[in-house]
Image (cartoon, each protein chain N blue to C red):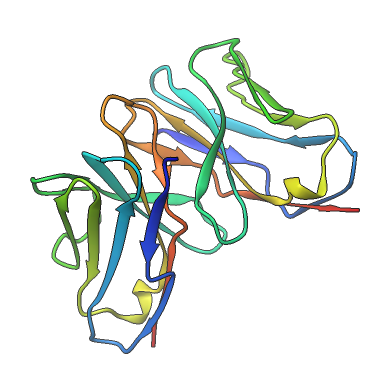
Amino acid sequence: GAVVSQHPSWVICKSGTSVKIECRSLDFQATTMFWYRQFPKQSLMLMATSNEGSKATYEQGVEKDKFLINHASLTLSTLTVTSAHPEDSSFYICSARPPGLQETQYFGPGTRLLVL
Amino acid sequence: GDSVTQMEGPVTLSEEAFLTINCTYTATGYPSLFWYVQYPGEGLQLLLKATKADDKGSNKGFEATYRKETTSFHLEKGSVQVSDSAVYFCALSLTGNQFYFGTGTSLTVIP
């Protein structure tokens, strides 16, 4: 149980285009989902916290107009990288927290984005 | 600020060798500490955790003890197997929302 999927697993796009990444909790409902970004040989950095039915909370330094997050249902959150540029190339990981389990996060396998 | 430092890899061990991956932390309060493991092509999975000083987390032969005096949470296993090859992340959390991760340590176990 407690499986989180991400789609796509990797994507290559041209500079200036937008890319949407989906994060789904497959066998549980997640009132809270999290989006992380990981650069090579660096740790995961929390980008934003997404609560179902409300606006996401972004970490300091993360551009909310650049990284649009939508948590429209209890099993789906999406991250859209708008007008992507090569510096947005990275590994994006989502996690989902079941209700009532404060310190539990189930992670997706990640999405590798390459912007040319 | 809050942060985690873990030993850089990659680490290569022979099967049945002893494993230690060092992790130290800096935190403004009393965090919970975690080790996550990421197998190739999969998401991070919780391996073990400890929520207060002197607690020992253990799972699948791995263990780590929350040492407040040395601000450490080193991961150990007495006899590694090929199937333990993965990337290991140390992490801390104060609130359950914000997790601070180390950079990850890649472990390869050779037969």
